[in-house]
Image (cartoon, rainbow, N blue to C red; front, side):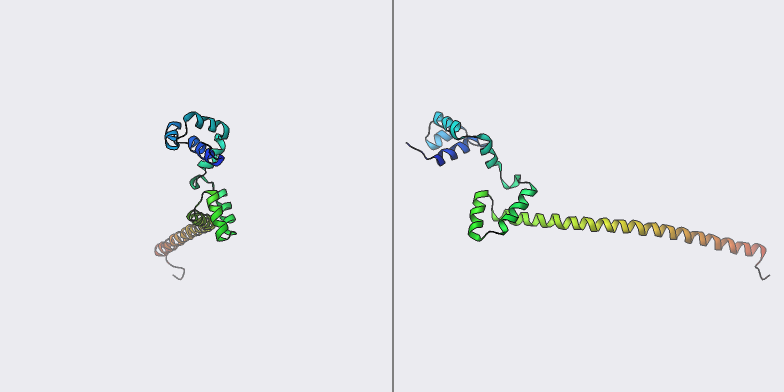
Length: 158
């Protein structure tokens, strides 16, 4: 029985996938002997490429790749977007979620900057308030001393 190269590659991908099916299970499932599966693995199976392609699930994408994917998908028509999503193994929901994440990152950096400025302004105002409270306390003490001095020695007009 002759199998296409695409079929062989897909079986090898299943065989090499982390946590995937073993050779015995795949052999029973497909009707292909274990030895043939091992031969296909040797011929078609560059394990690193297959593992990278299978592990490339959306939750393993880094922020830079997510950003590039959102940018790339924004310029595509609906048909092209569908093909692109199938090719990359994504769903349109991933793109929507990533757009929101990017917006939050951008807005959070603006909010952080604004928060930093508000904290700085708050420190300045607290410092000024402490200075004025000290000056007020000093004035109250001077006024109290002046009244006591007037009571003891009398006022200037006496």
